[in-house]
Amino acid sequence: MKPNIQQLNDLTIQVRRDILRMVHAVNSGHPGGSLGCTEFMVALYQALMERKEGFDMDGLNEDMFFLSNGHISPVFYSVLARSGYFPVAELATFRLLNSRLQGHPTTHEGLPGVRIASGSLGQGLSVAIGAAQAKKLNGDSHLIYTLHGDGELQEGQNWEAIMYAAAYKVDNLIATVDVNGKQIDGPTDEVLNMGSIGAKFLAFGWDVVEIQLGNNLEAIIAGMTEAKAKTGQGRPVCVLLHTEMGNGVDYMMHTHAWHGKAPNDAQLETAFAQNISTLADY
Amino acid sequence: MTKYTNTGNKDTRSGFGAGLTELGQTNENVVALCADLIGSLKMDDFKKNHPERFFQVGIAEANMIGMAAGLTLGGKIPYTGTFANFSTGRVYDQIRQSVAYSDKNVKICASHAGLTLGEDGATHQILEDIGLMKMLPGMTVINTCDYNQTKAATIAIAEYHGPVYLRFGRPSVANFTPENGEFKIGKAVLLNEGTDVTIIATGHLVWEALIAAEALEAKGISAEVINIHTIKPLDDEAILKSIAKTGCVVTAEEHNILGGLGESVARVLSLNNPAPQEFVAVQDSFGESGTPDQLMEKYKLNNQAIEAAAEKVIARKK
Image (cartoon, rainbow over all chains, first blue to last red; front, side, top):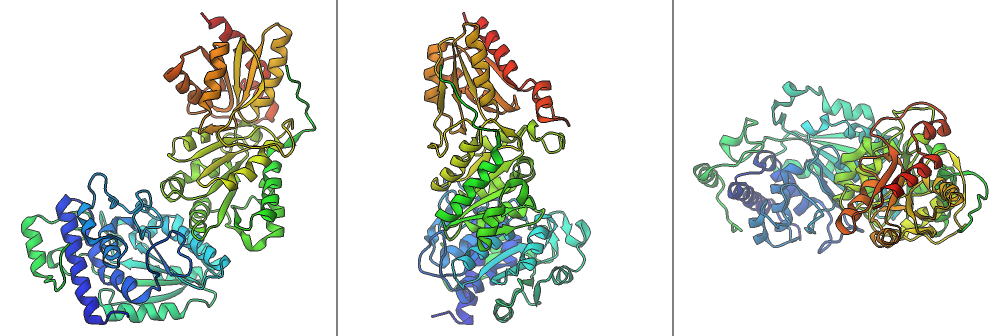
């Protein structure tokens, strides 16, 4: 049975705490984008995707997800662990020597739930298109989901992939862009202004769904349900998920400063006070 | 000394095409991707026979490599086809992260490698691809010598699970290995036994090595000739066994001296049994326009160069 909104919200708070604890423990990692995508990742794995029990690399007869912006590994790992792919206690090994939870996600250490390495940006959409084409060849009607950063779209390979997916009607694919308007060096509009991302996807022949409240679970589920309804109609689907980087921790919001910086002890306590868990820390 | 017969010049890329055609019929999991070079890569038949398993990606090699990685999920065996330069240098990070580090069963098939691409010149004549690919952990690197061997290798790599770089070329060259011969990844092929010098060659230089061995024999020099089609994993045992007998070696390849077969052989020797070595390879330069034969002569990658290197290395033996 799928969880209700209250349960999803409880889990979202717990995932935020996981993210904060993981990056705090090793004083490294990327909390900003992770927190911004927490509601989306929780909704995706808990309410939206059709998933089998356990994990196998081929992912036949289930939906598959690819994280292209691999630096938000903390949210990915937390959601995977809390969705049953590996023990929650293993989150304590994030970025440590000999861990399966590498700084950026990889298949190399055999972590269940991960199907491709990511970290060097701009590669995930191509991989997802290949997986989507394999699903069609295998007569598998399940969907491929992806997540990308908005700054990541500055990588040229994305546009090769965006062109391909439309030209060859890869319509079993929902690519979500985390539109938080920020990247390492500052606002995306200042670093390299991309203009209208939505207009670009439309011009390339994609369907576009906008989720304005990208940190609201109900808005995410409604928007993704709309996106899902647009699949199978000859066009790939892009979701523009408007989020707030660092969402849920007041001092991490409205700035790009926490893209790749961990909180100190006092900052961690402040963040915890803003995210009281009803579940249990790892 | 075994005498090899050229059954008629053929291009190695056509061996790839023939192998892919056969695989299309025998292995339904094989899929192929091409970046706007179907004719050059001889992928026409596969495309015609299996349009649903063929992916024309346009001039977008990075996307092609990523798609190939994704296609492996669900059991497909993707073969990508483009020129060697665009198969490696252009997409190194895509291969590194999405294929090699991700342990994906992708076969990167690269034509027009080396100087023998000819008149198009240095922009297209990659001489660094073996080095680039052999440095990637888990990558198998194969450079075939003629049509028959390229066809056999194309078919054999489908049965091996893991990323493979298969390198071949554009020009018509001697076809002398057995038709439908066995291809064992990582296994050297001893073509001629000899006692004075070992010649280890790969790709188009294998036939040149055989010609050089004949010329050396006429001078009373007994040359052992080994065809190394798999540069990684290298057949250390076969190399060491031969050099234990001959005491010196010439390596020959259509590649930069830095990063190629020669350096791999030197590593094996320095770790186990140091011996004099001469390198027939491009001396750390780019190529240029010209006919394949002109270029192989100018850059000293032919049988005369191998013969001279053999005499030089024999003189260096203590």
